[in-house]
Length: 150
Image 1 (cartoon, one colour):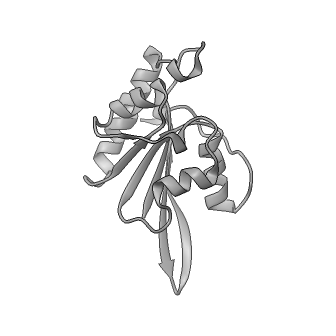
Image 2 (cartoon, rainbow, N blue to C red):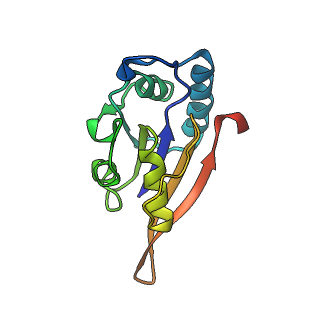
């Protein structure tokens, strides 16, 4: 299984939090990352998106087929987010368009088995794979990329 964590792009400040929209810079970030993802994702990848406006706008740069899942929304737990994706047993690739601190907490859990909140930059992608080698399940970090490097 491949698990791609995509933090929403830059959003405007304000309230209510759920309705915050992407800034012009955020729209450019989302477009750059979506172009990179389109070149690398398998066609059958599932896209799951937080119910907030900024995450849905970020995902819209990639596809119109994202599924809104409240378990990946603001305040998501590691268990809820991983459960929503089917990690590590689902087949294929799943892209999660979500928020900090949950995405950073998932990254820390997958790579270090730690309860920490690592920083994932706005608009960035962390791509993980799960594999079995000699009867041992392994998590592999395949890519980390921020929009400013595209």
